[in-house]
Length: 290
Image (tube, rainbow, N blue to C red; front, side, top):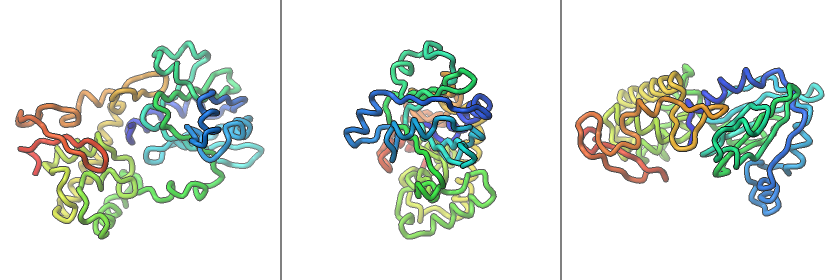
């Protein structure tokens, strides 16, 4: 699943490509409509696809930004502001093309679920192979309360203090540190890849309870997470499986990972082990992480 750096990479490419343009028409796939009819709400959430198609027509795209792992499209219609929110899910990808044939990878071309025709003649295309992505049209953030519960951006001044205060709460004290730092209400945008990397760099076992880590080590861990997220942004994110930047571009951070997906420890050469924490596979070195 794309984490903060991957979403940031998408936004940095997407913003200059679509800001200042107007959506003239929207079309959702047959799969989206069938899912809605079955009550499953594939991709389009809390609205009928036909209603969202109509609502997005003539929307002016003012700005594209990122909040945690979400893409925010600040849009406007008839002088009324809206927020179009997208989550990439596990395999979501955006393309800005003049024809669907310009999407070179067949797996993305076969799974196009939304086409936004822009006044420039370009197509803003959302492809999602596994269909876990989300699209919501909101008038305010209060329309989708989980967005209000996200932790501050990890690069914000108050983010470390916020993290320390959350760690003091009884519901987090006995949890594994890996599970806690992947919680978007504790740290924004840190998922399995970068939690794995940060814990390895710090020599902390992923199952170690939060209560058994000193305040000083927690501060160091937070700073390590922030540094790794910055490094990944600079390297275009990690292309693991189906992640792509816009128009199918891959990232480069996967070549710099030290522990995620590794069979042997890059530091001591020991065979790595894995366990399930917070529903995710956690890879670690039994010699280097305690």
